[in-house]
Image 1 (cartoon, rainbow, N blue to C red):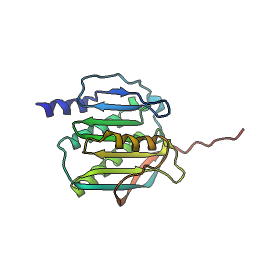
Image 2 (image 1 turned 60 degrees about the horizontal axis):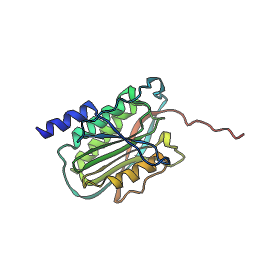
Image 3 (image 1 turned 90 degrees about the horizontal axis):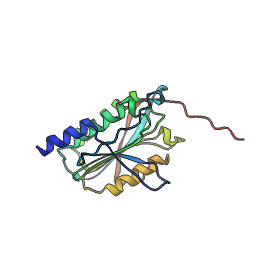
Image 4 (image 1 turned 45 degrees about the vertical axis):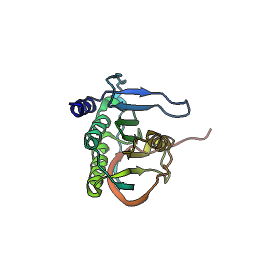
Length: 201
């Protein structure tokens, strides 16, 4: 009964907005243990489009093998949120339920069409590993700004502080310092807008 209730909240995308100090972007939290919901502002016209290109994500894994019965449902709920054109202004989103935390960042320059291949590759890697205590996949650095940075980190220990720290680094356009080893790089074809040029005055 409890599991069904939590999953239904994931798919309904119940949202609680948590505010952080001004120097950090606001993090939208899909709090699966709360019935509170906030209607997010719709800005479909701001959804980006761009060129299709193949990019290399770094994939990290650490800790012993573990499982979490709500992981796949939580990932699907998060994917559905990012695919929804009503939420183009939201780039920093987290899911928390019991001891599971998933923190994500998809820059505003990355098109909605990129969400499915990103999550598909993440799910495939998790399935091949059998899931571990900590899992992170990120696309960052090499001149990428926050608008072109992507990252998803999963923690099954209940430590939301660590995932928030990683998430905020992505929000600043930085690569996150992640514990564990880079087990592989993952090639994913994504669509992203061109990097905006800045003019010196």
